[in-house]
Image 1: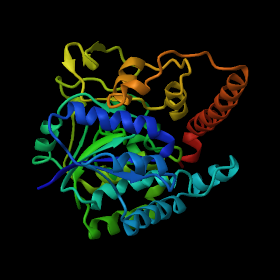
Image 2: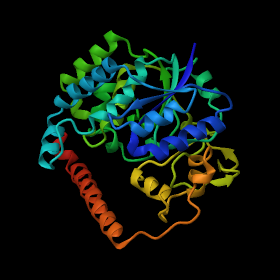
Image 3: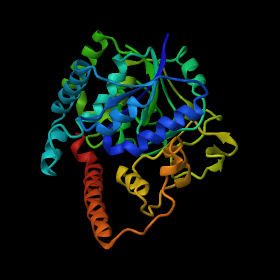
Image 4: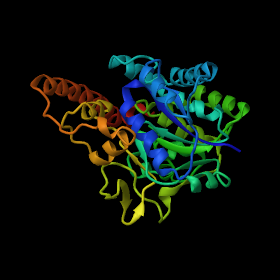
Length: 342
């Protein structure tokens, strides 16, 4: 049975992809094949990088990509509140549909797989995760369950029980930036049934602003497949960049325990691009990121960093304004959750 890693990426996250690939090579403990799922067709740099690595391939099954994008489109077309809000705020009907391409890992080449978002770095061997897949169908390692349930589902827990038949739904949700599973974990009949339920009204429970994450949580919890989250156990470490970790030889530790991965969730990819271009950008664990980004090409690592120009500061201010607008949309939606959940 083959083990593998999937990464969703394109040229926009090129610097992060290189850093992640280097961290996998340095810290996985053995050679693990990697397959990059294209976020879109912006792939010139990605293809060149893949060509330089023996164990990395590009996912090229166009039928699978089309299937999962159509799967996601059907779900969101069945979510009238989402469509209405997207239109109200000028977002496309298929908002972030490309993120559903990560579902291609469910019918890709690997029998057991671990999915990494492009904004992550691997810190240690993954052998225990692959072994855990002998016991469970789906594995995560994050503390999403400690945040607001409305980032995942937009119904009350009592109402969600009617769908999932699970006590304490909020303790079972997970982040979609890192997970492990098996090829074909959802068979055709299961997927057809899940999609039928979603189109029959259950899609209304999904969090409209969180795209693939809410869909993955629905599929796992509604299907009833066996599920394990390392974060529910005492041996778990953190993974989010906002946590305070110790750094020893470019490896991160949480109270003496080695992290599995570091997730730069919510930090703009442009920040990493500017940093690698020599701009003085403040990114958590910056030296660790730069170490892995230039592990194979240390001579290209910026030797000094410059402050951004006034024009760049204006551009950043515009981006911040737009991001704040999106955040305000999400906040407005959550504030009216009781009214629109009826």
